Length: 148
Ligand code: RB5
Image 1: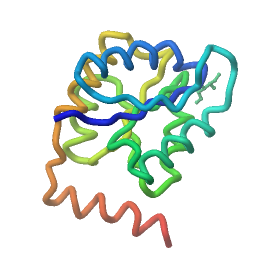
Image 2 (image 1 turned 30 degrees about the vertical axis):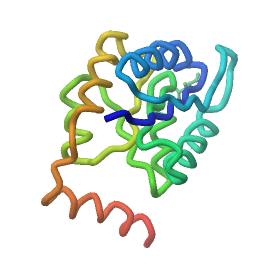
Image 3 (image 1 turned 45 degrees about the vertical axis):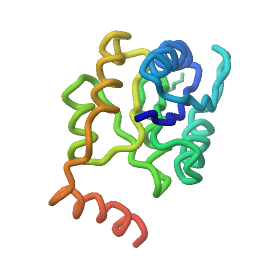
Image 4 (image 1 turned 90 degrees about the horizontal axis):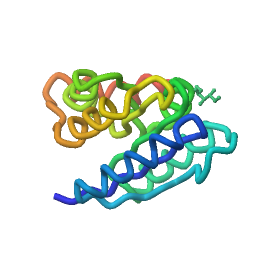
């Protein structure tokens, strides 16, 4: 099934974004590129916000965010209720992010992850379904608690 995936990164993730876009196209995905469009310095919260809008408006089913470490852009993205952004480091964390957390945004540190590991994570993330059950109850509580 063809998926539409949004991608966004700051300058710390621009290079990896370019590589992963090719990987997505090779998998038959449609790609929505929310920037940044070059290696110049930009602010990661702007790209996290653009991703949140794309997920909220259903412009894309899922997203990929990248900054230097993946930390800042994760913090920023997870402030939006529609986003469950998971910073992953390997295939195991990518799989668990889908199985248990129903993550809809995959996050990488462009300066910390290897290209082949990132590609591996991407494939696992897109191919893994949410397990539901007790995890659905927990995921539902994420927004209940954050709106208190
Ligand atoms: C930018 O230099 C860097 O701070 C950013 O990409 C990210 O790592 C922040 O968390």
